[in-house]
Every structure is written in C-alpha cells, then in structure tokens.
Length: 91
Image 1 (cartoon, rainbow, N blue to C red):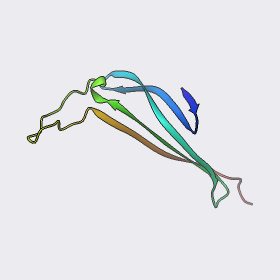
Image 2 (cartoon, rainbow, N blue to C red; image 1 turned 135 degrees about the horizontal axis):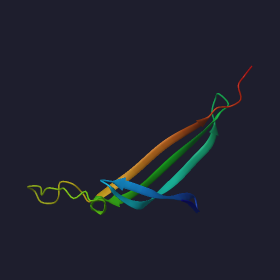
Image 3 (cartoon, rainbow, N blue to C red; image 1 turned 180 degrees about the horizontal axis):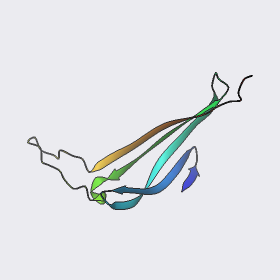
C-alpha cells in the first residue's frame, strides 16, 4: 500500500524474518525525474523505517562487560534505489 503524505510516501508491506510476518511501514522520498545526458530520465528513491527485531523472534543478545546489550532491539531499514528510463533511440 502506498499513501502520499505531504512531500513523502508511506509504503506499507509485509516483512518476513525467521518465519514471522508483520506489516512494516517505510517513509519514502522520490527525487526526480531528471533528464540524463543520453536523453533518458532518472528517478531516485530513498526509503527508511525502524523495526524491533524481537517482534520477529530474533531474541539473541549478550550482555557486554561494560553494561548494555551487544545487539540493539531497534533495527533501522534503509533502502536507496535509482531507476533509469532510456530516451528515444538516436538514428
């Protein structure tokens, strides 16, 4: 599911880790399109969000000697992509 909210998009889909599936929403930004030198167009996409790994059954951790946990429960998800649409062929 994709919803536009102000200048960003909220992208919601199912994420499966260790046989546990849960809905996750990422905040996405679209940059472009810009015209490339070859006459085609480029569009960039950036998406990010955060999940709690324990919600997906990833529970392993270890106490550090200095205190605290070796592995955080919060996991940041970051996606960067660029798409190219070729322009008309030159003859």
